[in-house]
Image 1 (spheres, rainbow, N blue to C red):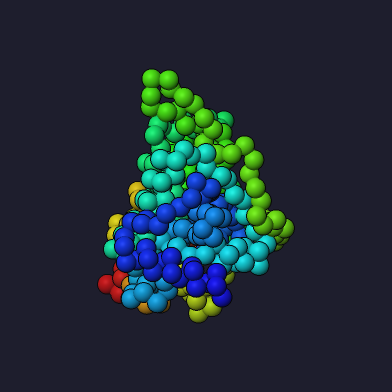
Image 2 (tube, rainbow, N blue to C red; image 1 turned 30 degrees about the vertical axis):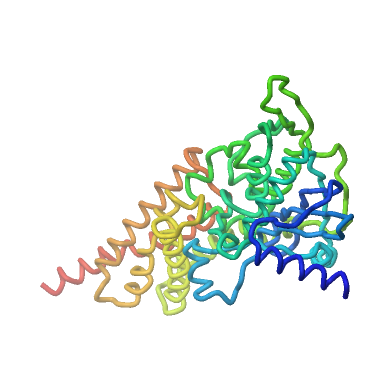
Length: 401
């Protein structure tokens, strides 16, 4: 209880006085805390926080940039639009670890190798950022998140410049994400559908640090070059990385082959092919309606993310050419015989769009998830089956004349 009372007293003092009025002892240690990924989707990429531990004054705080509130007005609408606001939280470090212990994640501590002035500047910056008018920020999954913010605060507090020396190969954002969500999972399949061209450019060293474990590896090899005539060079963090929680859980392995996107969609494609040799019936039209509506809805999401959303990496998405919202018109029009001609024309146009993108992907002109191909094949089979309706309708018109 005494420790808890002291904790709330500290935070109250910070709230009232502003930026870091507290006196920290020379024994204060500032550390970067890195948490390994968890099973849940929101935890798949891990987490980063900053710890300020003063054993003399019995102050042990964590500064956590990963807090969001589901009860925020229009939270889900804002989330879809990419207008999600996160905030910095500061609380006793003892309350930070249990969540990661429970989910079986590793938690590592890297002690920052800072001189007195740098340590004071960093602590002051954190407390200033924690003030009510400063703590909320517009979260960006790649360019402004719980990992990039602590790094930027650290670099700004240095007397010199940070030089990262880790031997890491640059790779596209899409591949970085794939390392954490799996390569043959439904999550990866969905992400690939909504990612645009920007996701396929190589991330710079700084940009790749949006992943907490990448930032941890980079800091382990980084050096601080002092901006003085001597040009003193020192390690950015202590040589050893201290495990605070020894986790045992790993991210889910790749799913069994029969529930992977490619396998499931291959079955769908074969069924779509078989239906091409079956007389049109209500059951066949229902199959087409479900298929076309599903693809159209995905296309609407892709269009929204591309043109309206503020989310990163989703712009200039060529998948819209075959994940086309116009499939919705085909789904509805297919039920009306009087619309046979326009339906057949629309089916031909959509079929051409799918064929063109199929060729683009097959020739390696653009990234494609392997599971695209069976879904595209199913669309080709079903749209092609509507084209003869044009000749049938035309023949009926000629006969009636």
